[in-house]
Image (cartoon, rainbow, N blue to C red; front, side, top):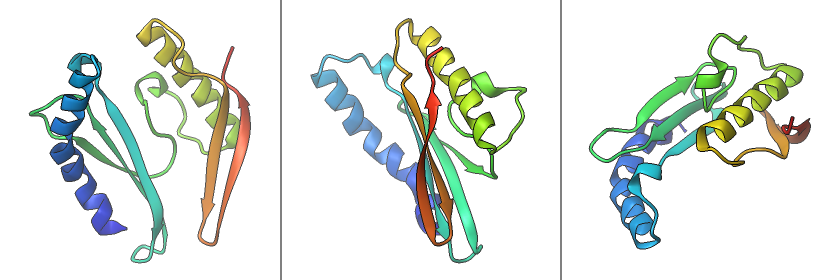
Length: 135
């Protein structure tokens, strides 16, 4: 897990030209390309769940790699100044803020519906429907 988290940013950088080429062939402008990934899992070394976030939106600029130390991830901009809580009601509130921000930024509805959360523990994974994101 630790090695994969160290190397995924480099893999994204190596694959990016193929992503841009496929978008161009599909008639999608490279200015619209952006990816945000979160890789998480159980770390045998740390004996706890760990996660790293990756973001990329242009060639020639390395992927942004950020270790997550708990709380919420992606997109972070609408969450600036908000509490970094993992309480499910707070996660739903953050999801609503993120969806509204994404929809406003894109000028159309690109986010909404039900917010699903994956709660991970060492020996268990549980998917929960936290509720509607639509206002």
